[in-house]
Image (tube, helix red, strand yellow):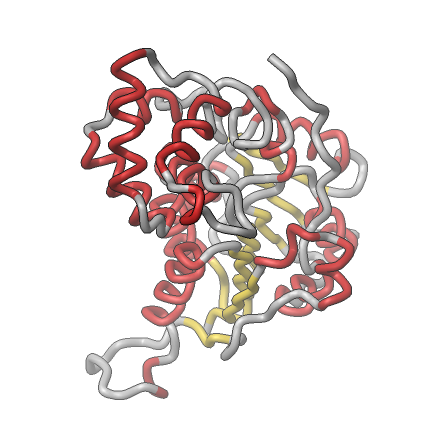
Length: 310
C-alpha cells in the first residue's frame, strides 16, 4: 500500500493560547493533547525555571515525538493515555490542582498524513482511524459490522451528512460482496452513493462520513466531555482552561460545559446555594488571524474558548 511521511505539525493560535492560559514561572500546566509538543514548548518557556508540564496523548507515536522535543526543556511528565482520564493521571502524579489546562481537540496532522493510520480518504491505507492503536475497535469493524441504521445515525449525528441513509445503504450493499478494509474502498463507496450533481464542490464527498467515523471510533465527544469536567474540577482558583476546537460538535461540548460551570449569579434564576465555579473569558470565540490561516490552512476551522476557575 502506498504511504507518505508525516507532514510537519504547526501548533494553532500559539499567541492566543498563551494569552488566555496566562501561565507563569513555577506553575503546573496540563497539555492534554501534547501531540508533537508545539504548544508544550512555548508553555514550558513561560513556566520556567520551576514549572511542571504534564503532557497527555492517546497516540504513542505522538508521545515519542513529544519526548524527543521536550526532553531537555524543563520538568515534563508525559502520559500515553486518553485525556478522559485526566483526574486519574493527576492523582497518580500526586497533583491535587493545576494552574492551567490546554485541550486541543481532534486528530493531528501526523495522523492525517500517515497512510497506515487510516484517517484520510486522500491516502490509501488500512481502514483504522484509532488514535490509540491499542484500543480494540477500528473503523473497518464499524463499517463492516454495524447495522445499516446505526451507520446512518453516525454519519448524520457526528458528520452532519445529509445523505447519511443513502451512504449507509451503499456500504451495506458493498460489504455483502466483500469487506471494506481500506480507506480507498470506503471513499469510493461513499462517492458512488452520492449523485454527481449533489456532491459538494469544495469538499471531497467522503469528508463528513470519514470525520463521523473517526469521532465514533475514538469516542471523541465522550472523552472531551469527561476531560472538561475534570479540568474544571482540578484547576485551582485563578487558573485557566483553554480549549481549541475544529468542528461544531466539539465547540458545543465545550460551550455547554463552560455554561454549566460558569458564574450563575450573572444569569438568574439559579439554584439557591450554588457556588460559582468559573468565569468565561471568551464571550465570543477567538479565531485565528487571516495571516495565520494563510500560512497554516489547518487553522482555518479552529476556535478558542477559555475560562478562569473561581
